[in-house]
Length: 91
Image 1 (tube, rainbow, N blue to C red):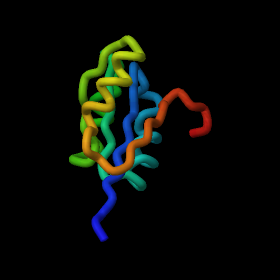
Image 2: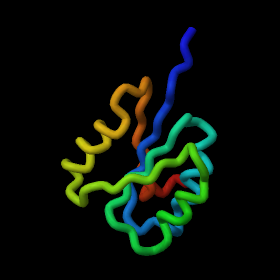
Image 3: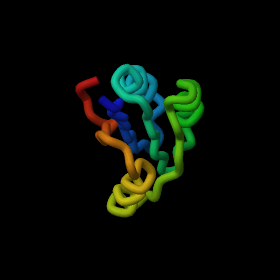
Image 4: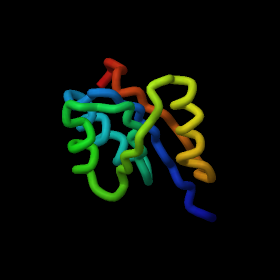
């Protein structure tokens, strides 16, 4: 049986206070985590890049509809896709 590749998308904008905790959880489950950044200036990207090769940072459009379609193109061909919103307060 072929390995199922799991990719999580994490759209962010200035989420330095929470992104570390989110990526700790996401990297336990996913083969790859794609951080879709909308122009953060607070250290979010540095924290994300510190998680190594399984976390990829890519720029995203600030318009949510455009950003959603960009996300689909970033992971085209992956077996499983999930989007985690850093703003969720359940962390």
